[in-house]
Length: 469
Image 1 (cartoon, one colour):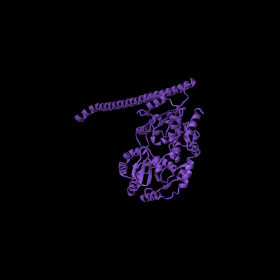
Image 2 (image 1 turned 135 degrees about the vertical axis):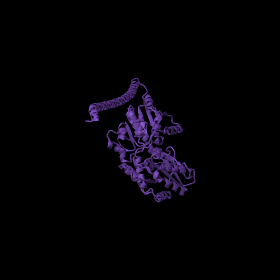
Image 3 (image 1 turned 60 degrees about the vertical axis):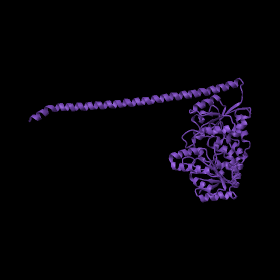
Image 4 (image 1 turned 90 degrees about the horizontal axis):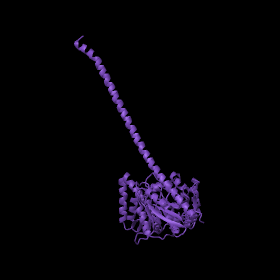
């Protein structure tokens, strides 16, 4: 055996031991790393649980504070009753949309002169579908400033502070304008307002689409109302068909009378004798009610206005359209830019106008023909005795049976993306063409006016709820 082999044989056990020790050390290090990782995971979990616990405790405190406020309110009201304090009904109108104030204005005007009521009007922010932030209170505030209507402004970044203010006011009854909780700051969701009797007059007059009844959030709202005031009995039955908990009452609709009594007005000073009122909905995407068409027709309407300068055209965009354009800027900047450019060019023409802040009724009554894609204008236009051209998107929410009745009074234009077809129908009516839908419009007029004195009927209904008649 060579000397090298002898040395190797002597060193081999040592090498084996070193290798074994190396493996053990590596295993130890690995196990420590795993233990360290486990400890870090547990610390992270503990931190998360601790944070969640803190959030839960804070939320519990908020709920406890809200509960205490509500209990104090009820206790104060019971004490007032016991010791003979004022029996006036304190009513809060929570307004996020001046554009639909005509729905409640008649009720408000009667209440402020009735000694049995104490009335507070409060303005708040709003957020329409497609918008990513709350805004718009300034528009509503300025509307009431111009009208000389006293009001308080609920504009805190934390809407729950505003809810505390409402609870300090301690209203007996609250009117909220729409069924959409998402439209208002979170503190004004219907579930947070149940310390008072809750009332609503639907801003859209009646439900034209079936899908509105398939949205569970709507029924959370409707079922918590003390009274849902509807235009007639068949509409009241429609709501109660879907839930026996909905307290729908056929009183007539104040906006119906407001439209009928309104004086015609026109914002364009010109000698033109032909007038088009164009109403544009905000639902221009395919994930909501899908009535909006302005993104499809604005180039044609601009051409129509330029080609027919002897015709005045007033465009009334839905107040939610601004939010839709914000979303469009994120998803399709080029198309959004094209619509913004359209508005700029529209504003420059002598025979066109853009209606701000929902001042719609006067121009609607002063026009010769109504051009619309929906939704409220499909109904309201039939109270103004004008032919209605309905640019009907094929994918819009399907009509309810009530909606189908309303649709009979419309001249549906399914091929509205054709300039020639759109121009032909508008010119037909502008030149005095007979409206083939006039008999159905008149029938719908009768349907919408079954009840007179709607605002007074609503007041009487509320007084009954409080045992004061």
